[in-house]
Length: 498
Image (cartoon, rainbow, N blue to C red; front, side, top):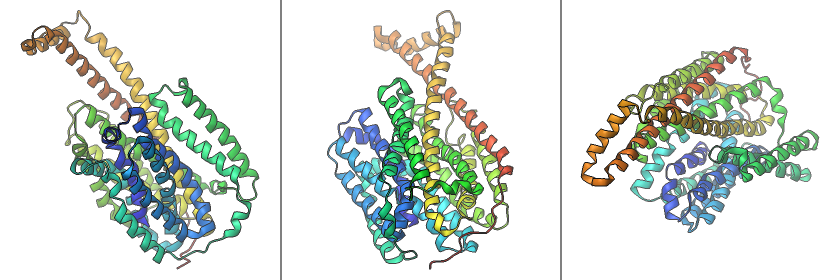
């Protein structure tokens, strides 16, 4: 089950590193190819909260096996796509069907295993949930360079079949309850799909299209707001709501969900920022980016068993505080970034990022889900995983907006420094022109263009440094909030259902 979840989470990031190859292979425009990611994310974000209801109705066995089999089939269909429209349809179905695997694993871990096994199981699930997005660009870059973009999808097929067959034969710890279908809340389902789907679209497309100034984004935001109102009205009034929000009355659950939301910003945000810097400023290929970022994955592997041991002796609030402190320190270190930073300069921030992710993720999972009774776990797990995904979506939208705004600001300031009348700027331009002297009359234009590129590169680096500082403040603020959380008692679900 954990391996199936790993495939579903990995598939988001594995494709992101190779969108340009898919764009060329399917003769798509930049706007069209972006939907390869957006359609997957929108569909997945709708399925994640719905999965709790489905596993109560059909049982964990049927829900998980159908998710794994459907994900595998859609991976094959994606590899076979001959046009961008086909690809978008298959990706949406892949995200929707596969999204059911992620929360089902989190819920099952607390249902199957007794409390004394959680320090072993927690780090395994935490490692998989955080490692998959981190190494995704690496795996994607290597597969695309070595073979072709089709292998981003073919790579899921054999593991997907194995997961499906093995899970069909092994999962057997709960029974279906088809009576829940009698009062199925269609209005709740449709309103939730509109609310979350339109919200995800708004967050994905907003930063690059001037937010509500764009008609499509404006209509999507309006649809999300209306869907939100209808959804919450149905949740509060329906006999059997599609999603039960009562878990949020549990203080541990809502504080854990809040921390999961912020962790999503750190997890997905930093997995995005580093490749932006390495590609745009350093000119790295997908494989070189992956090799540089692999440090984080290694640190997660090394720290996972240590975190498991610490879980048995430390207050989880202390672990979360130390984890977010490490996160804040690593990001603050990265705020001193220059255009010359390479593997060794990025080493310390990445070590702190990898170790801190594990130190936060495991106690947050335990805090949010570890004290709920078994009958509420399936539903709560869907909501909990949704907060991490939404954190990632909100984080990426804010980070992209901040990068765009701060790049424009730094460009305007730098342009003042390289205007005519500034001796150093004129000398630099003269030297560049001399270097291009062999190109004759084109030399001055070429030198001016190169100087403009240098200025833009510098503005990008300064904007990224600003983003790192903003993230430092966010993670430091969470450290201050941590003492207000309640230490979880080992109450709630036991280890029943073998």
